[in-house]
Length: 187
Image (tube, rainbow, N blue to C red; front, top):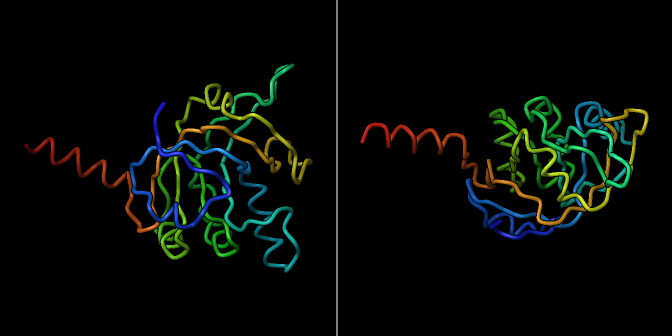
């Protein structure tokens, strides 16, 4: 497996070099959080309460986990639909979040926020949760255990594969891919 090797939490200068369509392999710690956890994080920000972890330079993975089998770190761990988090993402980027991993395209508002904060949106492969779980070496509960599958987890990952979907300049791999297809079709 090839790709640009990155470590999370990220060095902002490294993220600024990435281009939409680049393949990356992420190692380090990323945080799994979904809809309900996002709602709580934004509520805490709006109420001036401390967050359960420092967002600065961090990565949030929109992961749909399944229970771990005996002897495994985590069950299937594929990405979930990112657009469900669009209403929360700009505020979390304002609070220091630097990268996001999910699947599917993002709203124009989120794209603008990504550019404004020099952040990056990565996508991972839906339907490959069992394969992706092999890249997760440790899983630790961080906050909101009462949310079950939507609790926040800290995941230690090694060479976790992803693709740059929206880079820090606003280039969008979904749009670029359509343009390349149209050009090839017309040739």
